[in-house]
Amino acid sequence: MDIKRTAQFLRALAWIGAALVLVRPLLGWSDSLGMFATVSDAHFARALSGPAYQGFVLIMLMFPPYLSIAWGLVQLAAFCTQIALEQHFTRRAVRMLARLGWAIVAAALLLPMTRLLALGWIDDLSFGPVSQTVLRLPTLMSMMMGAIFGIIIIIFSSLLEKSVQLQDENSSFI
Image 1: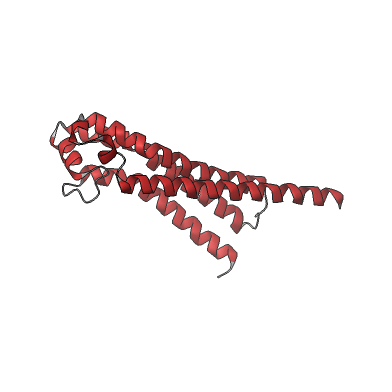
Image 2: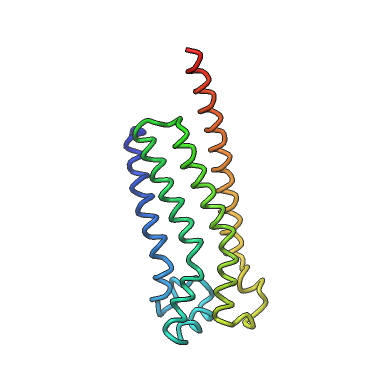
C-alpha cells in the first residue's frame, strides 16, 4: 500500500474514531446494564436512578476528555490529508500534529478532574476515598499513557518543525 492510500485510510479511521468518541459518553447514559459506564457501576446506577436530568448532567460533566480526543482525531485526519497531498514537510502539517499531541495531553489531564466533578455531582464521595473512586488504576493508567503518548507526539512535531526550518533554509540557498 502506498503512502497516499495509507493516509486516506488513516484519515477515514480518524473521522470514524472522532464520531465514536463523541458518541461514547451517550452510550453510558442510555445503558441500563452499565456495560459502557464511565464511572463505577454503583455510582452510575445511582445517578440514573435519580431525576432524569441527573444522568444527562453526569455525562456532560464527563464529556471534556472525549471532546478533546475527538478534536485531536480531527487534527489527525487533517494531517493525513496533508500526507495524501504529499505535503509532508509543511508548517501546517506540523501544527496539526502538535495539536493532536496537545489534545491527547489535555484529555489525560482532564480525565481525573472530570471524574471528580461527576462524583461530586452524584453527591457520593462517601462511597470510598477519592483515590479508590476517582483515581482507580484504569483511570491512572489511561491518564499516564495518554500524557506520555501526547508528549511523544509533541516531541515528534518539534523535530518535524526543525526539519521544515532546515528545508526552508536549504531552499533559500538554491
